[in-house]
Image 1 (cartoon, rainbow, N blue to C red):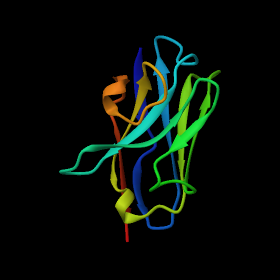
Image 2 (tube, helix red, strand yellow):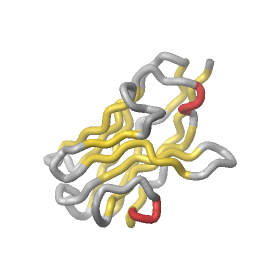
Image 3 (cartoon, helix red, strand yellow):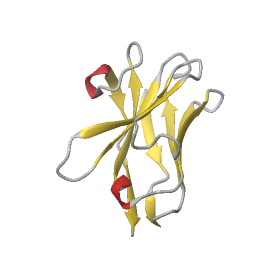
Image 4 (tube, rainbow, N blue to C red):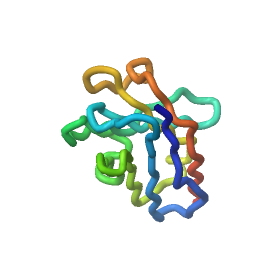
Length: 121
């Protein structure tokens, strides 16, 4: 299985972006999935996760602004990002969770290559 993240770009504060994470090679429908982000010089931080049944969980910093969703028919997970702020600037990664819902990167066993999101003020 490979994960391909896309949809990043350069936007202004207050704008929206939708990231996509497409899986190829095998279905991800039975797995929980997550989004993380990593800013330069910082650790990789949890952003959001979604269970195989659609239950969601968010980092406090994005709650109310970001929405994670999935389309199992398309083998794709999305991250809708609204009201973007300069502090949201980072490389965003999608990942497959190998167990119960977790915010820890070590709990995720398969990662996409990342997509850059840059928010200007």
